[in-house]
Image (cartoon, rainbow, N blue to C red):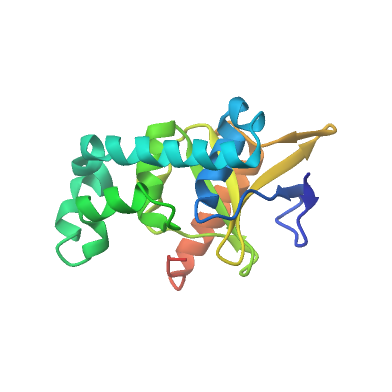
Length: 191
């Protein structure tokens, strides 16, 4: 059941819907938006489905690892152990909450751009170099609030929309806010 977002993001009529909070809320939100099958499942089966999705992602990661972050992920992992391939595989293949280091990979696998609205800051979440994360693909928007991801929906003509074209005015508004915030130079990425 969609609830109206308590704060305004431009003039958009935004709503959010909750997903299962079991450490895999990010994946539940993705599946909620991208899988019709997911909607037919009971809670126990949704957990199993999300778990299987994470396992599949962990098994596919080695094929993509050397291409992520412009091919620099392996180099970055020398200073950031959480970016090492075995660690990332293990974390994906678990019920642990994940951070932004997986967003590019998951976006590539699903063929979507993932935008995040930060509920505490009441603005779009800045991830860093946006050319890594956004490929002008169909887009989804998630709400990040209190270490939990939820689904964002835009109400249009009495329908809730959760997948947007790259040139949708809502997505263009998000992109404009990202560009503005990055131009300020004082915004630091990170959850």
